[in-house]
Each structure stands twice: as C-alpha cells, then as structure tokens.
Image (cartoon, rainbow, N blue to C red; front, side, top):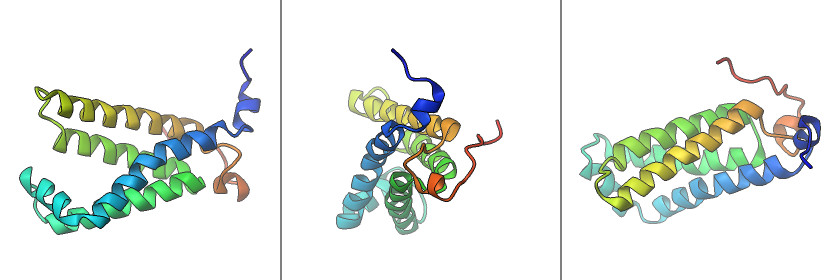
Length: 142
C-alpha cells in the first residue's frame, strides 16, 4: 500500500511537491516586480527601514529561490532559506492575528515553512539537478 523509502526517493512526487511549493514564491515575486509601489507601501507600513532594498531582496528571494526549488538545485539550502523567509515574513507582516485574514496568512506562511523543512530533511528527490550532478542526499546538521 505504501511505497518504501527507495521507491519514494525515485518517484516524481518530490518534484511535484517542489513545483507546488515554489509556485507561491514565483508568482508573489513576479507580482512584486510588476507592482512595486504596493509592496513598497506595505513594507513602509510596518516600519521596516530601506524599503526599496527590502523589495529588491524579496523579489530576488521569491523568484530566484522559487526557480532553484523547481529545478532542485542546492535544494536543501534553498528550502532552508525559503523556510526562514516564510517565517520572517509571517511574523513581520502578518502578526495582527486578531484579523482573521492576517491570521490565515500567518498560518499559511508557517505551513509553507513546515513543507520546506520536509525538503530540507529529505532532499530534492530523483528528478532534480542535485540528483543529476550526484549531490549526496545527506541531511543538514540538526
């Protein structure tokens, strides 16, 4: 009924999972790039300094990290970075938990970080650049 670890690591499922997780980052990054004024206003509204730099950084992390996650390149490191990014943005931008919409966004970001930590723990899978170049699937140190 359930696949063993060898079958799972050779399946397409990890690649599909990476694509699904990356989609929100890539689309969000593209949205920020196409409408920077709205994002700048949001960054400034929470009092962060260097809003323009934060915008450029967010676009780079979301589009770049999302693309690398899809490709499965340096996947564990990229997933760890995106997990940290998700948690930081959750607690900086979505901390008004008395607002149900903000609470949902906070929980969404926390859930995304959880999924990304699964990638950190188990790697990119067989259909990835990491597998193609023979990177070892050793987990990051705990």
